[in-house]
Length: 183
Image 1 (cartoon, helix red, strand yellow):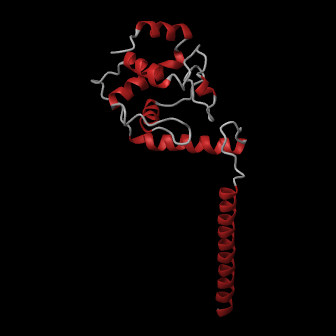
Image 2 (cartoon, one colour):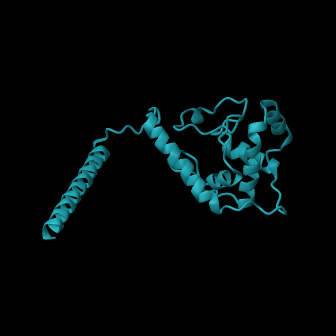
């Protein structure tokens, strides 16, 4: 029995040493990459397919997980789509290019690009869109609007953005003419 026990502990010891060497080696490699500057952080660099997949998957999984606790407003609270448009036009359109419009020069330089919410918009639920608007998304340029706007105003924006995939450039322009800049 002692030989079986000794053999087992021998393998466990070797496995632990191997894992330890791999962890330390990984940490050394990470430090080398971090401090060497070999990873180019320029927004003009196109991310590799693997890095793009990783970043998108992390973002979408995080939004899906953290938006689970978001409750839709009660039916008694109706979103004001015109107010959502007003806020979108003033605060969001510079990055999220409206349908039929030319991208703002600042928006053209984003990496990753800000979504336009047009016909090819991501399939985000209202809860996910509300959460992302309220909390922002790190490393993308998307600010957290929660400190600046009330939940009601963010729901107004959410209501408007949810209507964008069905909106034509003419519809957007008509709304732009109809909705005054100030409330």
